[in-house]
Length: 450
Image (cartoon, rainbow, N blue to C red):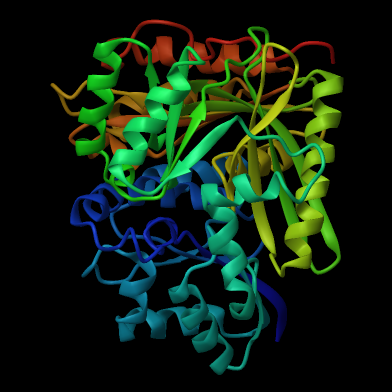
């Protein structure tokens, strides 16, 4: 038998809906089902060796083949279950034919290495089935016994608690509330001492589940409207914190960490562009962080990794921070999963070098008044770049068919400025199909002293 094969499992929707308090909201579930498939497609970048991908049916095969051709890889086998619930793993587990195809694709390999988005109950069930086929399993998440650590670290509550465990782990001042009356009072109290507050649910993704309020009546009214539209903000407890303005010369520093049985296996610093509280894009690589800031965030990553490892956590996790105007580093959240940085991390390793820089932008809005296809519109632009040796790759192309269409991209270059210049050029090449024509892709300079 061959030594190993990777089983890539982008269980993004199941992960985001796994907490019991979230799965009961039909509106929240519909939202995740709508966008979940877009980001599962990014999983084609999670591995470069022999692999089988579980992917929701309907991905663009031309894009899939192009991506692997440009990267010099043989396209892996894909297993797509019959869609019933829209949840990738749940549909796979209920589809005997999909499981048979998966068993055939994995046959002949001793070890199956799972490459998942994060821990979820369905993932452990699939692992048990694959193990029953005679394979040895290597999970990239905590064991089922330590699943609690994934649930806990993903919650915003963990940030509030870890400030009491780890020296130098700082969170913005705030209070945690459990009722509407407490929320109203806490917002008023903190606004009496600060210009703005941020209200956070214990769970959320991409900025959903949080809202910023300033001292104006209009802002407060907008917040109460947001609680009606955002199911996360209707789920107590909520954290009400003083909003920390980041230093004007920086974006928001972050670090992604991979923990295995031996401790920290990999650690990568990055800079996020955040519009108030919503993630927009990121840059990773040499020189994107000031050396002093980089040391501080890597030290923080090691501290959290040591504690998480002792609690049984395994796999990727990310820590998002903000560097205040008075040079203090605050933790805003921990993501106990593969973050949006993973595709940039993988492409920098395989399409670039250890000294290169990768830039990732997930959501470029596209006009919805005319259909835009990958083959007819997007592909010609990238093929011209590929012919010139430019390392730029479209992602989330399935989202072109959404009622609010968009596309993502990743670029790899020798410097942050060059990677961003390529991305800005692509948006210009897309021309009139881009819905939002204003402003640069990266509104805050992030690269300072190399």
